[in-house]
Length: 513
Image 1 (cartoon, one colour):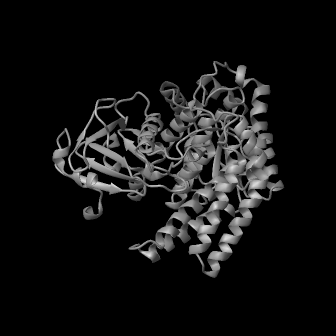
Image 2 (image 1 turned 90 degrees about the horizontal axis):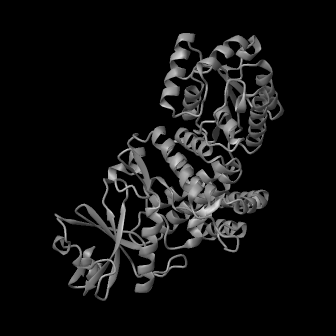
Image 3 (image 1 turned 45 degrees about the vertical axis):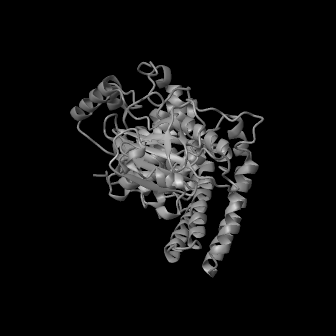
């Protein structure tokens, strides 16, 4: 392959060209860059290519793209030098045949520029963790919380900018179909594409106003743009995004739900619906974004069709494994259809005293739920969200006061009921994690399930009172959960809990092991 490389890249394959120890140089090529892995560092050099979506045709454009890449990717690690992957933009001086590395802002006329990155162990990439079964819900929970915090502080699209306009969202979605129809020509392909094209137009018409409202409320920001498992890496105990889109502002300044939808879709593609459920539920808890589920399937189907389009284009390229590429395209096409046409939803509620393990059991249920279209609503999180607090914020409320006054308790359950009703109509299965100690509270949700013709279940873990007390004390000491239940709360609950009736027990699910 090196014989076809430009002289500069051939020169940089020599270990002696680097000012630090290098045993051998490994080259990785993408459609827009050469990446040289040299010792503890990686150097990314833009290719002088011009596409409709990417223009690196001049040295000035490549330099600007390098600076943008450095800026947009450094945001994800901030000032933490232990996890910061992106170091600096370096000029290359001299000639292509005899290049030497310059200093940022130093003297000399640059012949090219490179982004210097700290090299990481490829085994830590999340797609590799997923492939060997090492990707966990804990990894994704911390990522969900970090992404929500990042999005909350990211630059918001100015009102007079074109970024995130609904018209742009539908044009990006429509753009996939012409290319896919050129390459996927079997009758079943045509049928699937026609169905998806119709669904795309119908779904967009349903959410167009909401997309505009989300933009107006600050939900369009400078995000990542390419947030899938292969662009996430585990560094120590932190999952870090990298390789954000630098070459096209319109693909980076997007609705926050569009960024999240890519990773959710990728987990479904990797046959990890349980992890998809947990990641999305944890992100919704952390972000407080109650309207995201309504627009997320539109974005996820679009992302799946982009992946299908890329695979279809690759199938026609010289030297490609045509059958494998077409199979990949059709797999993404099938995934898009499953997102557009989800299975019938179900409604699950929990029941139990504080410390009985409701959140643990609901996490296990989400992990086992195979549709990938299930969300959890937690009363502990919803109560705080209704009063402008984050999931882990302390409310300072006392027993039966503040956020836990009887009226506030009723408001929380009413909001959970309204949100569950909306999500069921949108095709999401819903698990409501709350105490549900009173029969009338449970009955309201059972009636909702009947009204929406959804199967209804109750998840009711139990534990001895001594164990409940131990768990509550330990949870308070850790301080890392949305629940603010105290031992005094437990004592009060013991006095008013209304056990499940025989009729309710017929809806009870086995507690996950």
